[in-house]
Length: 453
Image (cartoon, rainbow, N blue to C red):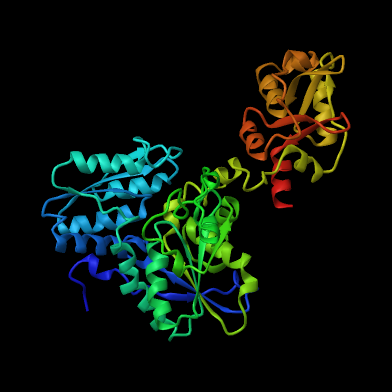
């Protein structure tokens, strides 16, 4: 069997049981893996549906330009369909989105315009406003408007809901999904609740978004709105695709919990998923008391981890935001793993022969050189050998005559990476003052010993 084009492969995604990460949940927990769609996200479903409906209505004409505000995944679905169907694409997005998302859109020939995140939707600089302006200015263009275009939720009513119902043999008791445009959760929920009104639909929201409070109080509270890092869920307005009557409960998840859980899913379940998946699974664990033995919980895994390599899967990015602590070894750790001993030094007025005898008797390869107790240089085996080859009589001369620049001093908090970079063939050690005020020497051997301990 083959397909006539890549668009025919959209949908029919697998349902996979979660094991290690859901071990404390009494229910059966299943993940709907939407990364197997051609654009690696669930947005392929609604992007194709919106285009097909626009073609039927005459809003999208042959050779037209698709203009949309998108965080990346919808844009990918639209771009893939545009390649097959012969349309151009211009996308606006926000500067909080992953660079990988923009690169992927451009790979399909789309133009991407990056707009500031922290502005009101009605601000002319916002990615909503810029896309609307472009639709007015670009001839033969069409804006899908995924937030308010009900073809979005209809795609999931026609596809995602029926797939989950069939795959669970009608046994699903709970649906968990992130809420952004609202199309995924609302369309899927509408179909599932038509089959069984007792199914509970649990929406995942983020701090900085208005959804949870609006559901619980009916109040649109602008004080709930503030910048957040989590991608793909939450909003600062109410999209028409969000049907609050179908969502039984909203659970908020912090940026940190979402980011760290995204990584845990890969490490515990070998599923390489995106940021909103981390939010959904963190929300599952926060709501564990809602589930009982015999329940069948389905979580939507919307997109792929490759969209987030520079963010949630990047230790430096997480560390910069305080999501993980500095875990690199430091000079302090190296000293704690080596046997403490007083450093051997030699006064600059001592002879080279005395230095040779010290090196031989102690079986060491280098000695810091001091003057009145202060380190002013160093002498190494290679320094001595080179000098003797040039002038055998140098043995009676003072050490200062062949000493070189001192080993660099570092502090106890210097990272092992930096120390390793300082040690090379020209500089075989560093010096550090320990917490008791003693001077200690760190060599390559000490670093190896600390790493392998």
